[in-house]
Image (cartoon, rainbow, N blue to C red; front, side):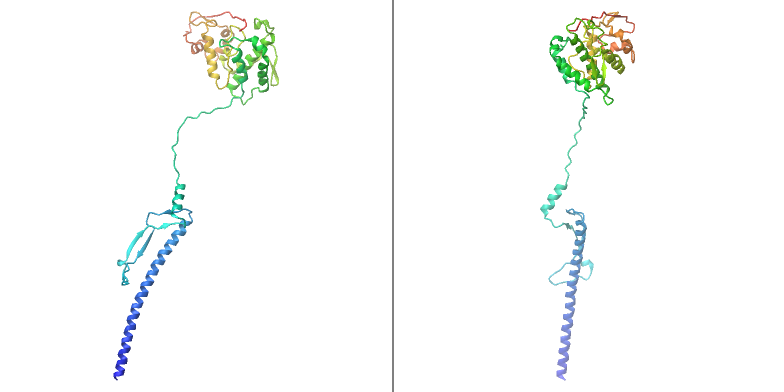
Length: 343
């Protein structure tokens, strides 16, 4: 009986111990299970974020709260909280990386950053190439024509080859529809002057261009496929280009003509050159005198009066390019024309 009681007591004691052990064991394994679950969830979130970010091909540190992880306060007693109230919520940044080092990440980020440079505003000037190069003619004028417009025909005749080379260039490069009006004007003004000088050299020495029979009718020059004379260039081409100032740019190798400029006309400088030639001609009292009443004008204004009254009138034209003031009531007289050679 006593043995039975002892056995029963022993059995109960063992059962209690086992029950207690099982209870503690369940709590311990419950704690382990809960801890593993939290770690697994957190790891899964990180894996998802890492996978999503890796598809973008960039690396960065997200400074905002990207995930929420429940961290259990664990003590040495292995206390397991009974409710969420005892669980601290920690919001912390999640570092997203594709596996490269921090130094590499910073370097890549520096490369990706674009440094904006200030935009400097400036004027843009566009330069267009001229249709024809008149440099060789410019060299002839600079060497053989004075600032007063007098020509060294004697010296130029000895070097006539340089003039003929320029005329050859004119012959091989005639204007076409792609040329601007300025290019065409510069071409034909220079051509007229070069051919006039060549006409003089063909007959030099002479005292006047009028010593040559029909000087403006002679066809010595083939430009392109056509033979030209001076009359045709002046009346059929230049005068039809609606620019009356051409009369002070082309010369007839005579003293009363406008002076021969000692530089070639060019498309880019044409406006300034035509204005300069006109002002110089009007200010030369041997050719025009606008200070008296009646005023004395060159016969050029009489011979080509139509050109100076086409878009304006003669008086307005004179006032535009002269320092003198001319009134519409002012009388006009024309000066005698001196045909002596301009040398």
